[in-house]
Every structure is written in structure tokens, then in C-alpha cells.
Length: 364
Image 1 (tube, rainbow, N blue to C red):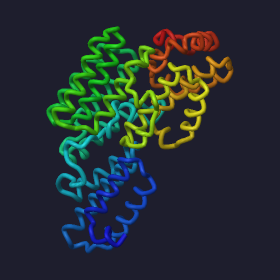
Image 2 (image 1 turned 180 degrees about the vertical axis):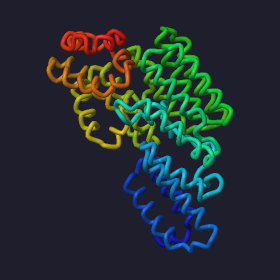
Image 3 (image 1 turned 180 degrees about the horizontal axis):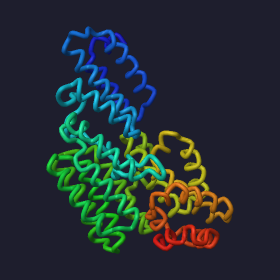
Image 4 (image 1 turned 30 degrees about the vertical axis):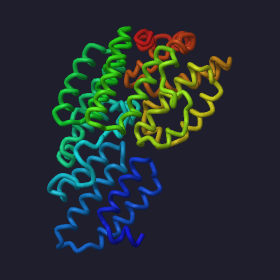
């Protein structure tokens, strides 16, 4: 603590590392200490305003993914810093490795479009503070929303627009989000060669930069692609083993990991494990900030219960997934798991009659 007190900049960096590695207790401890230190700094010192601005940057990150609260902290940071943050450079990844902007920012069931509008509103301050570290983020999120609703043509158009914006500002993490969406679109068309080429392109882009922290992201995209086809042979070995590398992932790709790991367990016939692990994770409040995680987790649990012969529990889990997803017309998680869900969805369609008729028609 004495060393951190003497080196304020290092204290801020220490807090940032705690955030990206998902060490919440250390992050909170750091921010509280820095708040006390900043409060004691002389108001007439120009450095004081800068440190207080950086403190708002940390608090904005800590409020993730409450976009309105994040935006208020970034606004105050912008006013105090009068320039870019020095906490991280413009090429550091906004996504922290997540291959999906939608996964990061979809927080409120029934409020998906509002979440997008909030992101658009508050990205301006953030982009100026970080020299456009969030370039393309709102567009790729909108493209993913269209994809989730089955509007593939418009999703692909917007995806390319997002990629162009991200490329102009050198934002590799956002570029990867656009490529991952293009991979999923290729799979929907049945074009595996295109998907495979895009996976290879991601890896080539890393070796050119080099940005090796994104290698795990590429592996997770590859795992998602192969398991969508019901295949495990092409899934990277560490994902198939579900080894301790999960603990070394940045926070958001670490959370997305569970979407792929759950599907791997299903394809591998590990039904009891699916239920045991995902039921526990559904109690984690930080994961429930990601509504996409809740939807997929409930789908995987429903599929696992059905395979184990417990139709009542399967239907209950499926209803929870539908309850979260259908107000926002999020259909693709069900469609991409139709190989496990078809009988269950038919039963639910009969039970709900006209209420879910159009949704089930789109999914099927």
C-alpha cells in the first residue's frame, strides 16, 4: 500500500488490470483508495483534475454494462481530462476479447433497442477520451440485433459498414466482432468454406499486428462455428478439455466462453454437466447482466433436461429463455440449437397457440 501511495499512476494501472482480469474485489478496493486519495489532492493543482478524470474513467468501466451510468462517468471524465485518457491506448480492445458487441451491451430484456440507443448516445464522450476505441461498436451491435431477428441481408450490409468504421480507427476488437458475425451469416447460408476463410483471416490479422491477446478470441469463434455444425473435431483442444485457460481470459471473452462451452458439452452428450454448471452460473449476477448468456444457458439446460427424459424441467427452462428473448425478437439462439430443441419447441408452440405463433414460425 505504501508503494501504491507513492505512485498514483501505477495505482490506476493496477485497478485497470484488476478490472480486465475480472478481479472485482481488488478493483473495488483500488477505486475506493483512489477516490480517497483524489479527494485529498489540492483543488488548485492541474494534475488533480486529470486524476479525478481518470477516476471517472475507472468508475465508468466499473459500471459496465449499465450504459447510462457509464455514460455519465465518461461525460465527467471528458470535462475533467480535457483530452484523451492515459489509462490505456487507442488500440487496446473495448471488447476485452468478446467476439460480440451484442453480448456485451444487451442488458435489459424488452429493452434491447433502448440499450442500443443508449450506446449510441454515450459513445461520443468515450470515443473522444479513448481516440475512437469504440469505433464501429454501435453499428455492429445493430447488425447483430438484425441477425438475431433473422434479417440476414440488412445485418450483412450494416456489418460491412461497421467494419469500415472500425478499420479507419484501427480497432481490431471491433473488426473481429464484424468477422464473427460474417462467420455466423456464412453458416446460415450453408457456406462453410467462407466461414473457414474468415477464421483464417482473423488469425492472419493477429500475426500481422501482432495482437496475441486475441488468439483466444479466435479459438472461441472457431469453437462456436464447429459446434454450430454439431462437430467437435475442429474445436481447439483447450476448449474441448475446458481447462484452466478460462481463468486467464479477459473478462468479457471469459464470459462469452460459457456460450461455446455449453454447446460443446451438449454436442458431447454431457447433459448432467450442462445442467450442473450452467444452473450455478445463472446465480452469478455479473453474468446475468449479459442477457444473451441467460438465453443460451436456459436453452442448453432445456436441451439437457430433455435428453435426460425430464420434459417438465426442460419446458420450464425453455420458457425462461423465451420469456427473456421474445420481447426483443431474439430468435437465433433457438434456431441455432434447433437440433436439440425441435420437439420442445413444437410442444411449446401447441401450448401457446397464437401468442407465440409468429415467433415459432421465424425460429423454425
